[in-house]
Amino acid sequence: MARGDGQLTHEIDPLDRGPQDACGVFGVWAPGEEIAKLTYFGLYALQHRGQESAGIAASNGNQILVYRDMGLVSQVFHERDLELLQGHIAVGHTRYSTTGSPSFENAQPTLGPTPFGTVALAHNGNLTNFDELEQLADSRRDHANKVVAEATKKRSRTRAFRDSSNDTSLVTELFATEQGEDLTDAALKLLCEVDGAFSLVFMDENTLYAARDPQGVRPLSLGRLSNGWVVASETAALDIVGASHVRDVEPGELIAIDEDGLRSFRFAEAKPARCVFEYVYLARPDSVLDGQIVHGARTEMGRKLAQEFPVEADLVIATPESGTPAAVGYAEESGIPFGQGLMKNAYVGRTFIQPSQTLRELGIRLKLNPIRENIEGKRLVVVDDSIVRGNTQRALVRMLREAGAKEIHIRISSPPVKWPCYYGIDFATRAELIANGLSTEEICTSLGADSLGYISLDGMIEATKQERSQLCTACFSGEYPIPVNTTPADKGC
Image (cartoon, rainbow, N blue to C red; front, side, top):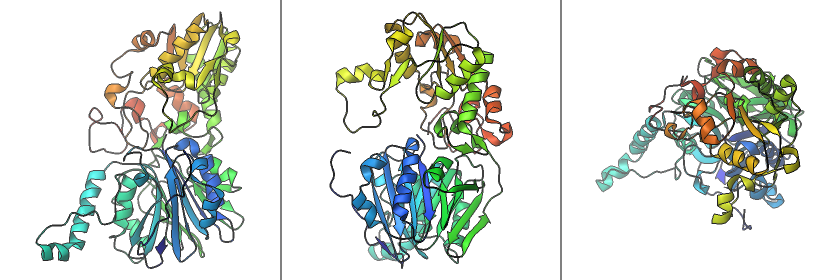
């Protein structure tokens, strides 16, 4: 709980309960609505963006309450939890860590005091100037502790506000010492100091805010309720709460929503470099990114893949579920029938119950099982969205061989992943990427497949119907639109 004067006094701890890829953010300003439930269902729609932890902060105009815990949205929140979160503004978050360890301390939204009240903040992305911002926070903290330091003759380095290791908590801490006439003014100044990918949804006691980095790397959409507003990582979350999609939050834009309506501010010039991997894998197929339905883009990738890498085969199957739209497109373009060759266990996700060594060795079988009668004796085209380390595809090929597949031709609806991401996707380091150092033929041999084909970079981009100059393709091309404080060979995200 945080009081209206901005003094952090208490935060709700999770109630006792049993066992319990990029992040998702959601925010709502809607007086008279059950904002906690709206946020809960919004996060449910964004569960695919992070399964590590979830949290909701709500304000009734006088105080902010935060409830967060490790686990899936359905595991973290119960009806009684949502009943505690009363008010007219809420922000929510579902997390997949890219900076900071997977722990309760790093769950979001974060909460902290500011000169203007309390701020609760949720973030999707990854900041590239973390060290620089940490030095700024240290200098401000040292200045604030100067009197104490002089009195004790000891320079204090106590982390006054931050007990976690992620970039979101660092931004929250910087809000505590940012100067300005109000939180809007302070945010405009602070956002100019922040580099990297960030789609932020935050609030004080009375106002909901949303901001997107100048490149617009991660998506962020604005929706309208009959009596309020919603912002969310994807339009699918707007749909589930009954909000109509108004527009995307523009790159370099800060919006503020309160009883006076919606106001828009620009803190930086827009230099679009939107993540193309959102179209390939991250976003839900039913979401709309920059006017393009993701499902349509993925189906078109499959069509282009069939044009670029045709093969004689009996059946096209997908690695479910992410490879399905591209597999359908491949089948339509090639004339090869599409069928179900793999059954996915819909209830296998992130779990706190670790498998035994015997089950761990079975690997992919925990999630996928072949349908032998559809596979045996068949020449298969197996369509997937990407290959990172190659472990999954290698195990999949072995499993299909054991089920009697005559030939296995792997087709990938994205180019080879050769570079790490610094903008919010937890890829491997460059040394771990199978396409870094191996040719396509060598990768094919390593996987045990009969052939392997990746869509071309041009083909993938054409399928998105976006301008190449406005997309980030760094993980495929090594061309980073935002400078990073390390070289791609040294560090992953």
